[in-house]
Length: 115
Image (tube, helix red, strand yellow):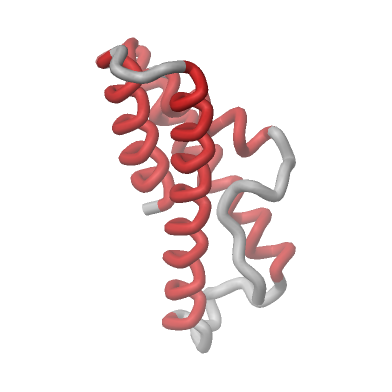
């Protein structure tokens, strides 16, 4: 789901960018809002997931374990998407590439929750 949120919002941004109907300042503001939306929606989804599955023995209990596994799954999915886009929609390569870069930046601006 998190990668789907990323795809949805960045596909919309890139489609809007391709229209050429905005200036540079507008683009910077939109990029900031896109990233904010992605992080907020993903964090809300993860929070609901954790609350629903809280008693499951399969759910990792420490924030570090959960974060490590989540990042590994997100990276694996983004790498799969990279191969798919390379073979099918090269114009969309920037979506999984952006996701991979965001994961590798090691910054706290990608989806997270507290346990």
